[in-house]
Amino acid sequence: MKKQFPFNFDNHPKPSDDFVQKLENKLFNETIILKRRSFKPIMSCLFAAIITVILFLSFSSNTIEQTDLLNSDTSSATAVRDDAAKVFIYQTHSTESFLPITKGKKSEALDNKVNIINVGSHLAKALEEKHIPVIHSTKDFTKKVNPIDVYKESRKEIKKVLEGKPRVEYIFDIHRDMIKRDKTTVKIKGQSFARIAFYISKTNPNYKQNLRFAKKINLKLKKKYPGISRGIFLKEPNLESADYNQDLSPKAILIEIGGVENTIKEEYLASGCLATVLAKVIKE
Image (cartoon, one colour):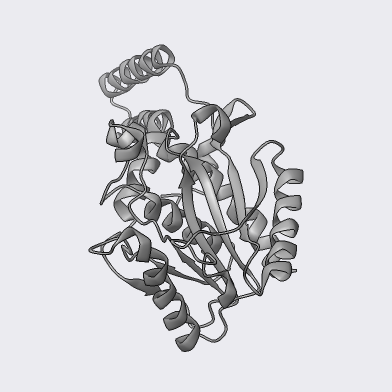
């Protein structure tokens, strides 16, 4: 839809329901009058088209959100979009979802259909729209795997991609946090966005290069979208997470987009911002 209508729907203010209803009624009445005056049929079609556009703009935000969800395939394995891809996106904790969707406890905010993979898919699409070819894995690494071994599972996928696609150098593991909404949400020009955090393992051999890369992204993100970054966190991984697999590339980062209380729309908005910044960094 966005390709057919190059318009920034996300930033378009939604007309009030009252305004839409009045305008629809007025245009409908004008159409009836035109018909009675025997105008050419094309005039009636024109007014009908105007009504359709107004209604489309009113509900475009929800429509786009649902379309993105439906188009975010979470059933397949790694989808190779371009042999020239330099970016690999995956989600180690694949079923991490959001309370507005699961409606349960934080510890139970997991879902097999709408989850962090959808966010990774949205990020991948946004990068491709900026002419950055991406390989995005929609594989569920948590399926039939002991939680302590989940990073080992995603590691297999990373190595497989690196062996088959030697041009890949940017590796992003997408997650969401567990902390409260007030810590993971920011308003930018009146609209709510999920906030973004970067995690770097201090124990992996690529620590300095990964940190340098994260700082570069974070600096540009803070400058372009003030308040959206939560910053860079240096971690000493436990046995479960090992080195976040960041030893496999000097440009590998674990990125948390929002938290368990964010909406999928807020997640998508944030991933769009991240894609804008990542594209600039990659093209430099």
